[in-house]
Image (cartoon, rainbow, N blue to C red):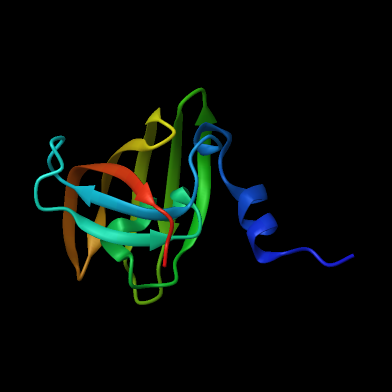
Length: 119
């Protein structure tokens, strides 16, 4: 029996994010959604590495309780981060993220809203 890539991705999604789906998300530093970046992801846990979204990073779920999950990740070339993701609704996430990118520290909060399916 063949297992689809979507089924494998769904199985690895932290329980806290299980109600959320992959698809097209708008990510903004503003809770009002001002000046968003649109990103298509197969699974919402990929938004944990928003700072390193162009890289293939290895993610580890550190904790997964209720509506919050903590994800740590390491990327080739030395970038890394840790993100606390909070499920507000199945279409809305808050992401507190920090780490090192291009040898400099980063720390900020993001607001993500699912706006549809990917094309």
